[in-house]
Image: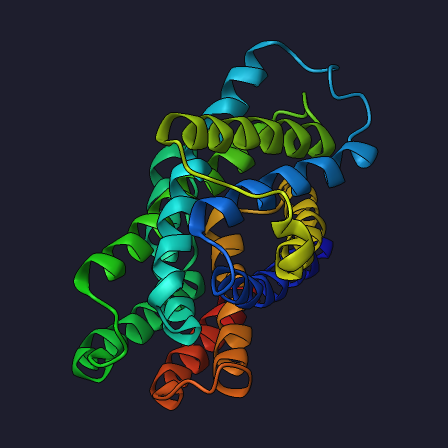
Length: 283
């Protein structure tokens, strides 16, 4: 099934993109990175958007709602990544499976099979290991507030993922239209935040912080793959959410090899469990 490969590509790209985010945040402030990240991503989507005005007017409101959800989610995740090890963030990000599964079952009427529920149980087991190793997290500079921001980001991302599925299944908008308007509204929201909060930004940041450019390109490419996957009739929110957790593999590898983080082995146990859950969810 083509949508599985598309979602796997998205998951791998997400893990790499989170590493780029952490590098970008070491050189610039959170809101500055967020604004230039979204603005540049929006510009990159325009050439591939097609007829951006060829959709029912009500969808502009729906897409704005999705953008607002992501506006909040990214503020939470970027602030969490400022101090949180990327390998730890990648494991916590798996909690999105719980929220997406609930939304898929309650709102979309999905009925996961026995193997898929077992796969979800393996994901839960991985999160339980993380919870039991709470003492090992101390000393990393991660407070309860930062952990809460990471979990809240997962919840909001799950809501956004469910909205993607609902919008794309109608067949009334294309992946290009969804992506370009979603990024346009998101850019406006961050610009409004900057103006209201009087946050200072410097356009020269794009030249001095190349990580923002790198993560923008990767975001546009991987997000398009996810939107296309959502347009397949046989794709489901529950299965897609599990497959997207493949990003944790990249988070663990890059955390160990690139950022030289400690305690990665315990987090790798979660990665093994989630990998088994992914296999069971799609066979």
